[in-house]
Image 1 (tube, rainbow, N blue to C red):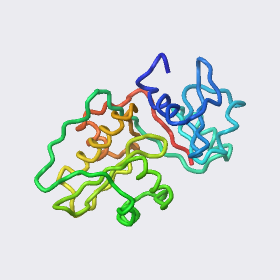
Image 2 (image 1 turned 90 degrees about the horizontal axis):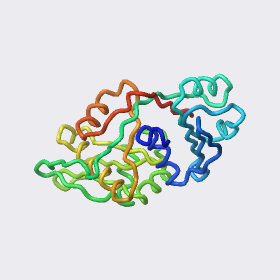
Image 3 (image 1 turned 90 degrees about the vertical axis):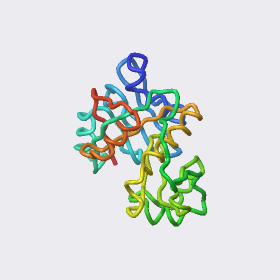
Length: 222
């Protein structure tokens, strides 16, 4: 982390949010947050130090070789490869809202809308309640709820959805910019994981000024 504080900034942020150090040396690090049952692994870690992996619901590693080994060992069944992007400026992206578009905090009263429109298998109500409690942003068009965004429970930017009828109005850009502002205000590190091949998300991150880490592929295991 000291050698690459930007590229491994997501590890520092995960630790800040509650990830406990399970193993650390000069070559690698294992963090685990038992509250959300997620592990982060960075660098090279001896196999004997990976007992927590496979018991954690989700694991993120920057080693495709480790991801393959864990899958082969039967500790996980699914793998999703991602590119990492991070926001390095001190001020959030400057986004001009189009006529009729407004931003506001998402509230518990918006829960039915989120459950109906969030296209993620993990969109169960207790999970969404936690994300809203931490702070999500709602986008409206002419007073009608049209989209939302927030941070995932591990801290990455995401949970971004815009109802199809209201797309192409700059809502996605405005929503993520607002979330980046919240993360910066809280002293966090704005970063996201973009699934390989998701060109629409890649374009959005670049438009907002996020920088892609070209040096590593991150692997989510479930």
